[in-house]
Length: 341
Image 1 (cartoon, rainbow, N blue to C red):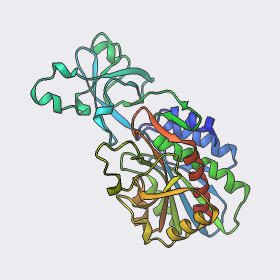
Image 2 (cartoon, rainbow, N blue to C red):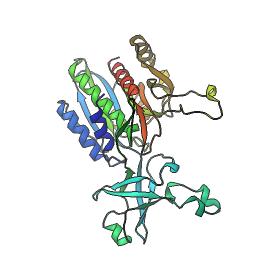
Image 3 (cartoon, helix red, strand yellow):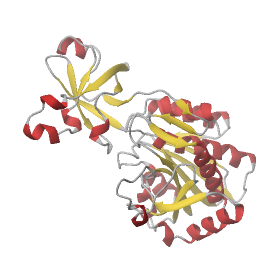
Image 4 (tube, rainbow, N blue to C red):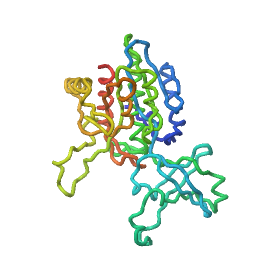
């Protein structure tokens, strides 16, 4: 596990549609490996390994939980709207980063305190009710630091919890990028002359507007592998109804999704082969429902068979996403199996 690479990716500023800082790190890593790199018109990064006729597409997504500045009031507070799905209850009272065309600046989110809210205000805690405090004295002061249309992400430190866990913002997306970069190094070391591996680091995946289908349309790969994340639901259940749900646990291996909101993976012949290969190799994995950030790739052209490997995480799309090191290693092994099927 390349912890330093994961840290660098997770801490980079890469909101949906403005993933330049993250993309630059990825381009540097691919270039160091000797992999030619191109950019698509939507900001995605594409690397290619080999020149064989059989094309295999491997997909990760670069963006993170993101917001956009929509207003600056007379007192210098910012208002924002979410660009990706987020739980609004996790947004208030957090350190944030505001940036884009202008230089990045720190901010803190705030919400009217509970005991001062009246009537329906207690139930209306959406992102549009959150204020961002830049420390500005007034609107003119705030406009020296930012403007409408700038991007906002969570801030946060990269740290290890005990021996097994890692916590940081953006791990639900950037872990896939780190995994794909590690897999790229393996594929370079053991080339397959009959294949071309197309490495896609997609933009806007968490916003539901992934750039990956455009690359799939142009390249028409034989099959595709999505490297994703999924929310773990292994916390204590006060209603004791665990037997009624499929639970994804941290530390029990990466997820091989049976389906998600966009793809029925079990329909793909590669799905059964991947499961059998993982069992034969003794790789720990789990099965359940995935998230599906780039699943529309399978509808491109005449249809592209897909499988997915997802890393379980707690607190997705927050400043404190938690992953387990064992799941990372499991995902890395599963990804390599899926790539060489």
